[in-house]
Amino acid sequence: MQRFKTETVRRVFPGLFTVANSYCGFLSVIYAIDGNYLTAAWLIILAAVMDGIDGMVARITRGYSRFGVELDSLADIISFGLAPSVLLYTLYFHQMGKVGVVISFLPLLCGGIRLARFNIMFTGYEKENYVGLPIPMQAITLSSFIIFNFDIWNDLKLPQGLIPMIMFLSLLMISTIEYESLPKFTLRKDTKNLVKL
Image (cartoon, rainbow, N blue to C red):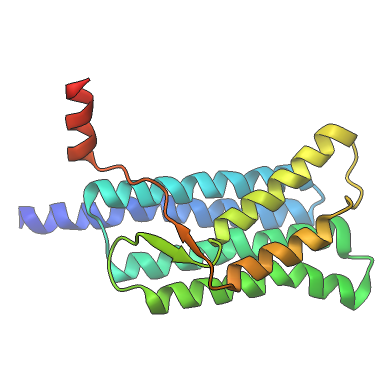
């Protein structure tokens, strides 16, 4: 019974950060619709932080499950696919008609393809590399660009180079280019290293 409880906690705990990830993405959509564009951009970055903590906690606790993988993908498509697309449309492309809709849709479309391919290829709990640019990276790049552009120019006009950037990042997500995963933190190994120091 105790083992069952421990196993349940170990699997549920990482999921809390996954839920926080999706909640930040949902809030980003709301703020973008309300015209609070910078807050929406920061919430996407915060969602990425939650996503990173989620993965780290899952590795430390060995709290992996197929359900967790699917839930994480659902959270990612909200925070790093839907939220950036809504932000781009409401901020820059809502006056461009169908062309603006298509451009804004690219992060959501290509991000969804990227996640679907990842789930099909997923065969274990840890991967040494990824095929295609991870969807959080394109969302962080776009959000940071919007924030940086405002800090430099103090306006929210359409920046030069944003449309090519959107297209380029979208292509990278559905490409077959391999990216190395981030260094993994493991409690046992890294604790030993700290003791040695």
